[in-house]
Length: 564
Image (cartoon, rainbow, N blue to C red; front, side, top):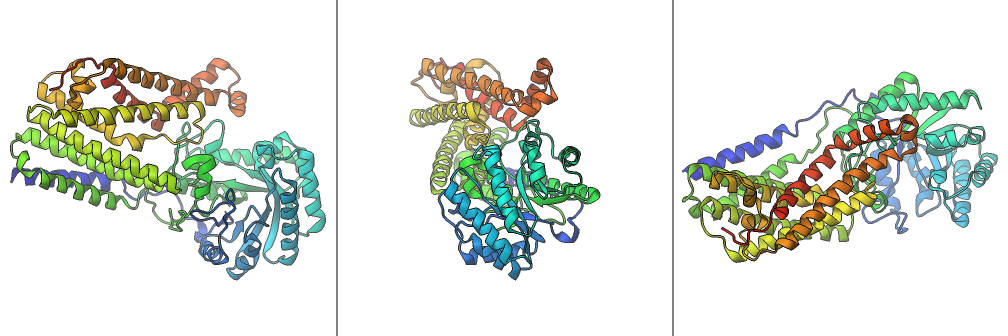
């Protein structure tokens, strides 16, 4: 009866925590009529993408445009000639959508020629649908073309069509190349606060967009007065790596879009939101964050609505149910051994079990959602499998500590081996974050079990010993491992420590060397201070550093060659 009562209490706490952390949130005023002015549209699905030249079928594009007709009045496309893209204008007409049609330019002349020819043909054949044209997208930012060649393409299209013609790039490019302002019929700028050199909070972002548009308008008026401006891309990622104070999340994505539209309507700004669908192929270039800017997921499920309340994780109940089922299986399997535990130790074991099962299920969902290829899914399954094995072993070790029983040397060896494996993997992942972490997400979910598992064993050891001392934190004592290799442990521990320091320095350096950041903070001392604050208040970074600290401590105090 005691076991059942405690188990029910733990299940209720699990449900309460899941419910309270996933309440629907008010993210601002509804989008008027529930529709956007314009929405970026790339119709690629899972396994498709321009890099591999795998394109959607006409039927898939038709289905997507039917979805878009409920979300937007117009769509912006980026390419015209590749795959089945030439079919889009006719299908857009079918669903009552207008278009801002793009011609994709790159470094290959033949491809550029085909894109320009097709956008000209399409604009002249579909004047009722194609209302504006954009020649090239961030081609100057990428360095694929020089300004002279780009202007030649713009002029060629302008001579051949009646629609207004523009070029799209980040807003600073128009400041760098003011001659563009004279060439285009309207100025198309991308303003993505998440990617700015000085990343800001989502609440500050709409004001930032307003300031940038007015700044560009002021500069443009000195060259070509009253030239229209289109915010060609603005949005917020729903998943991925935090940058400074810019936190990707579904709630923040919805909040930004609604606030941006409010600012746009108040100021009469013309805008296009990026983007309609999450683009899994972008993960190869921009990681998880690059693949998650859509109103819909890659499998065409709505990420968030344009009206009403928004859930950060609408599937939270499934996580609670699955983790509860797994927890109850553990309780049923361990029912007889659990009878030997005192009330306090029983409560500790059950709570520890529920925490680990919840983290295991949560990790599985997080990693699977952000896996975009068979290779990534294999890595997810391997990671989850190793975490599951380690969780089972750690629970067994926790039970032996709570009952003051000798450790099973075989189990102890497995815990130690898996822990060293994860610690080495943490060194590798942190090194990658440090040297080139712009698009790499913090790998925290992959380490839920080794971090919280070993931390739980630390707490249990302190409780059962009724004291605290560094030797109790020794990985070999915690694991019940009898063949300690203190020198090896310390080497890995110092490697983790060194990577933690390197990551912090490089994270701060990334801000310091940003061009706009330098302009904003010309004084080097002030710049370093502000950059450090951005790093120190990045909660994803702080949590990962805390994980590394927990992984490091048992290795650095290693040296006790006996296990309890």
